[in-house]
Every structure is written in structure tokens, then in C-alpha cells.
Image (tube, rainbow, N blue to C red):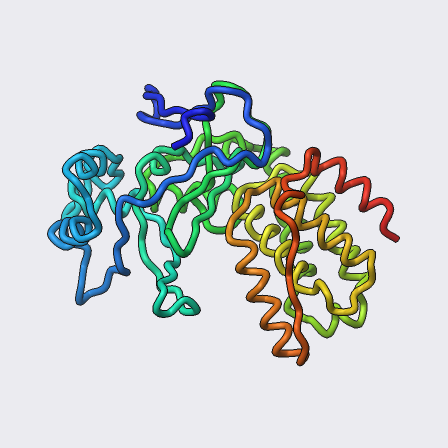
Length: 333
């Protein structure tokens, strides 16, 4: 963990949690850390017994000190029969499903569950101030500020893989992590709740209409596609969205970059770069380069020509991604 930005504190309500020790600008990498260890997917043939987890950890260099830290992680399944205060319960509570690349088969990542130390202490919020990403080659987890964070504010991420309405979110969090979410989005009731549902319905509609799947439609009417993306971006700027929506919008940003160099108009290319810059500055620096290059390869094979995705990292993040992107959007006709 990078001590210059955050620290772990003990709270009465949540136990250990992560807090900002200074004002943090949007786009800042707060910290990064490798996992304690990785586990293959649990199967009927090989369940995650304590003996199996211990053996896998030992093979990956877990020391007595690291095991002590692992045993100190929260276990939300401590009251459940057959799990209790076990290694298994801590893995279920703190495990993160990721994809791992290896040298022998770099193009075929395999799914594993990674358990981290400090990252496991970050609390959930349906409107988080941070987002997370991991590096496939090293399994390193990285945490970025997706908005400006004031000193002494708690660092939060979304535990949910996709956006959903309030009651659905609360139900999933209760089932999976055994807690009642009390973030400000989940406290919404009455008229405000109705407006929130309408907002999520609108963002769902915009995301659906801006998907990159129908490539022929995009080629035929780039301006219509551009207008949808502009609507989506303005909605993103004005809306207060959960982490799942952020990830879906971010994926769209990487996909639009895949059309770089394919005879699109200069305005479209400029918008694509700005869209990419904006979302990277806002949501962090994940595995976007690899994802875009993969999309470009797919496009090349389909269209029969080579496409390259390349942009200087020195341009990112933007000093003021909101105002700079808005200014350019108004210029695009």
C-alpha cells in the first residue's frame, strides 16, 4: 500500500477500513499490491478445504507472518455450518475472481481467485469513490480514485460486477457478503427512488444503443453512433452512477478506440481519443491497452487490414477531464 495517500483505521461500525490521509485528485493511483496467493476454481473434485488452501498458499511462498495476516481478514460466513472460522470462509469473503496470464499460453488466460491484504479492507459503496483493476501477468491489484477525495474520507469500491436497482443491489450484497448496505444510494426512498430507477433505465438504454457489436451499422451511420456516445457521456458527467455502470461505460470507451485508423472521420477519431482520455482519467488505468489491441486484431481479421492502437501515456490523465471533454464535444458537429 502507498502510505502517502491512504491508511487503515479501525472503526466501530465496520472494523478495519481504508481512509484518505490527504486530499486525493481524481485519477490518482492510491495503491497496488500483489495477492497473498491464487486458488484455482473450486470444483466438486477439488473443493476449497482448509488443507488445500494451506497447501496452495505454502507453495506460493506464504510465510507465517502472511498467514497471520490472512487469518486476520474478516470472515462473513463465521456463523454458517460447515464453513465457520475457516480458511474457506475467508476466501469466500475476500476472494476476487480474476484472469491470469502465463508465459506458456499468453493468449489463453485462466480464471483464478486471488486473495489480497489491504485491498480486502476496502468497504463497499454503490456509488464508490474508487475503482479497481488488476494486471493479468502479475495478478497485482490496483486502486484508483474516480473522483476527488477529501482528507479523512473513507475509500470505497463497488463489490458488484454490474449495475442494478437499489433493492436488487441490497439483496445481492446481503446474500453474498452478509451485510445491509447503508450507502446514500441505498438509503434513497420515495420520489428520489423513483427518479433513481428512471436514471438507471435511461443509462441502460444509452449503453445498449451505444454497443459496438453492430459494426456495419456504425460504419453506415457514424454520426448517429457519435450522438449516442455524446448523450452517454453527458449523462455520465451529470449523473451519480454506481461502479457497475462505470465499468460498462469504460468498456465502451475502449471499444470505440478500436476503430482508430479505419477511415473514420477526423471528428470521430478525436472524439474517440477524448472519450478514452476522459474515462481513463475518471475510472483508472486498468488493462485497457491489451483490451483495445485485442479488439483491433479482431477488427483487422474481419476487415482484412491492419489496425494499430497507440497513444502516449504522457497525455493521461487529463488535468480537467470534465471541462476539456465537454468543450470538445460541443465543437463536434
